[in-house]
Length: 428
Image (tube, rainbow, N blue to C red):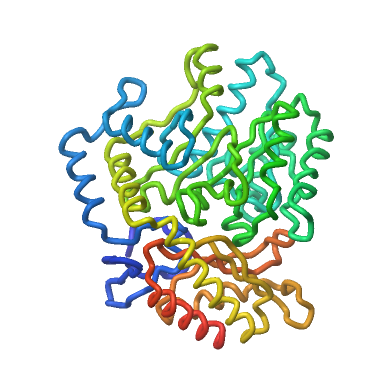
């Protein structure tokens, strides 16, 4: 009998080792990690350099509490990361996971307005669907019904106005203008921030607005005195073919950017936020401290992992690799769409790609979800890991697969991935 509290009642294989884009279980079965776990393993598995950097840091300084010390590795990483993201004046707040990063961003937005004398601003506008994390504040901000439903009684509902998801039929600026109506209905003086994923992840696989959307969002937020938070936890750090996905089509600088997953690429828990200098200055000139924190924030060993991962991303130009391999994978998915009628759409940016599944007779989602799980199960039997989901249409309907292999994947491995997905689609 196991003493592990598993996430569900399904049977879990036991992962025993990993290298590159592959994971092996304790029975010797090999899996191509077509979703990088949950789009985490950006530089691939088994990088000795990262393990050695973590070991060296653990021997030198394994822990220093953020309320008492900074560390050399944190200072260096913050400087390197702001340069990579081209946010030169930003301040980096380190945490352990994407949920913590978004929780921190929400609380920072609230404190910023209080410090400015606008204590009536507490609402955070989010989109439906969306997913910003599992902690209570991040979950309240999320527009993902199945994950929120159980915990709704714990949430103050009027604090989280919802905006419709991006509409590909609209020009980007026109699509963004819908934020104005939500702001007016909520009461502009009560809104602290608007948060969105520049390219949607788990809730609506790889959905992205048309060019001009984020630039207009930024303009509207400035007009109303609302902070613009870009949730780049999944899409950022090169995965979409740009250091920041929000800048795929224009030079947009949000007030706060949240990051995670690919920062340390699975080698250690690491996430964080980038806040523009004016936000930091307002807080420090006000109460003098961000009234928030986590014990392991800025953990030196995790930050050392992040620094080593950033070295790999820059040295191997994995941002460009995401563009090239993403184009190859997207083209292959288009070919699978022509072959398999229940693929309704393929889409995405870089190596954050989505496959929408549904009824070929109607061109709409199946009334009863389940096809995504069946395809994913068949793919797993063949040795391919994908990220299935549902609920993008109305919280229940809308099957999809999210695909996001390591940015280090080779052309041959992309071909292998497509072959296995083809077989899974054939037999599901």
